[in-house]
Length: 385
Figure 1 (tube, rainbow, N blue to C red):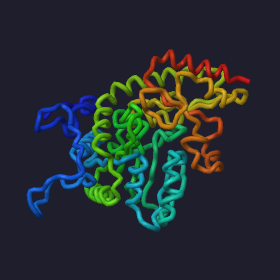
Figure 2: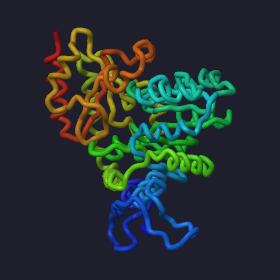
Figure 3: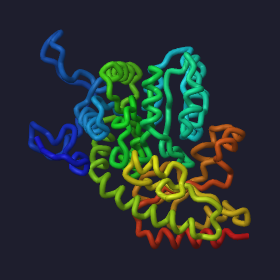
């Protein structure tokens, strides 16, 4: 067994390393649906790939180790992972969610789980004293993103975990934007960590996957049952690709963040830019909190142009940076949250929480930063009216 102390090594050697049968340094793709059993009632390790698959198991062990939890679960998408976690709750339960979360999270709560009597309320999770006042007997969980999507709002993860523990409810953190390389919520007492592994963990825009990590045996047993019963599992080939992507997470994120820090500073200095949202800027909301709980500000930036700039022209004028859904790939992507990632959130709510029609979200890739800056500056210049 490999010995290591640091996450850079765990990314490569963590979980279930290699193949004990052949000595291969990569876990094989066990592309099978079923497994031959030695006899009736002998409780085989593997029986059916919805229930368990060796490639998926290696991935699940890896993400559990990286996040510092006791069990990991791999799903066919980030939304499948979120759906499995929300399936822990029952009719009459209520969940408090951050005031800006991914639109798909809002949609599944508002349009699906509401039908089963599981309700939610949107709260400012940055204000812990006010948040505590919203904890009524029916509240069973606090669900946060930090940094939140798309305004990069920072929530104090330890304070939320402590608050949840005090009231005997669950704390859930979507750690997609940071990954365990930059932030490990379980270290602050979080009960459940969720990832859209499609993003930074995969890192190459070539797979769709979701991961969940828990730090409690009872929760692990419940999620294992839900995963098997509902069946939204990740297939072996995508599990293999995701393990491969995670191996380079550290070196990729170092470059992502290096580029993002330079671009955020350039946007602040650009006279055409009205506001920049980036947790790595000293005057950003939650900067000091983020410094305590994360390695740095990550690689997501949101910003708004001044009124005399045409946002549609801006998007049309980009040549290197692609207008696209998703984030976290090696290529830089830009999106318009109001009509793309957060379109499912009603207009009134978007305006209330600050997701304006002028907001631009940038996922900074690992290209040469000078090329990225030139593309942004040219597009901004061409969009002036």
